[in-house]
Amino acid sequence: MSNTHLIKWQYPESSDPSKANPRRVDGKPPTRLEQMVLRPLAGWLGAHPCIGARKIGLSRTFYSCIPGELTKISSALVFLKTLDEYFTASDPGDPIEKSLLVLFHDPITTPEDFFNKFWSFAQTAHDLDSLTHEWDSTVSNKISDDTFELSFRGRAVFPTTFHPCHNRTARRFMYPGWAHNLSSQFQALRDSNQFEKWKRSIRQADASTDPSGIHNPFLADTGTISAATQITQFEASDYPFISRMPADREQILASLKARAIRESASEVIEYVSSLE
Image 1 (cartoon, rainbow, N blue to C red):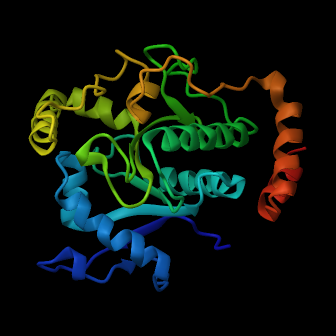
Image 2: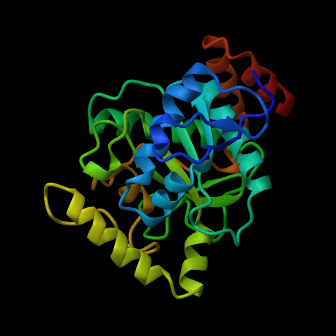
C-alpha cells in the first residue's frame, strides 16, 4: 500500500474535461481505477449546481482519495491517514472549494443501502480515530443534537454525500462518496458575508436541476439541525452511530483487532497493536 494516500489531481486545460488526462502532482502515473473514477468525476462536478463543486470541476484541480470499499476496516484507516495529509495541506482559512473528495467502489443498490454502509464506515473510522484523538469541542458528539457534526482527527468535518441511487438528481454519481469540508470553511463564508449568497444560489440551481422543482428539503443551516440528517438524507432519529468515550478504549482496541484479523487487514493489525 502506498505511503501517500492523498492525491492532488490536475487536469490539463481542455475544452472537454472528459477527454483530459489527469496528472498526479506526486508524479506517479494514475492507476486504471483512478482514471475510471476521477476523470468522469471532474466532468460531473463541472456541471454541478453547487458553486464550490462547480469551481472544482471547471478548474479540474482537486484533492481526492479512493480508499477501497466502505465495508472494509482497511479503508477506514486509509481514510484517516488521508485526512492527516489533507489537513496538513489545508488551513482553516482556506476557501470552501478546497475540498477532499473521497470515493469508494462498492455497489450501491438503494438509498438505504448507502445509509447503512456510510454509518457503518463512519463508526469504524471513528472507533479508530477515538484511540488517538478527541471529538472537536466546537460541535456536539451526540447525533440527535442540532449542533452534531462528525469529527475526525480532532476537527469537525462536513461530508456532502453522493451515490448512484441518491434521491436528488444533483447527488447522483456512478460511485459512492463524499466531499469533505472543514466546518471552519463554512464559518469563513459567514464571516465574509458570502454564506447567504452561496446558499440562495445553490438552492435555486438545485431546484432547477431536480424533477421535483424544489430545492433539497434536507438542506439546513449548520447548527439548526443534526448534520446526520443532511449527510444521508434520512429523517430517522435512530442513527446507527455511537460516540466513543475514553472508558471504551480497551473494548474498542480488542474489537478492532479481532475484526482486522478476520479481514486479514495487516496494516490495521499493525496500527492497532502499536496502540495497545
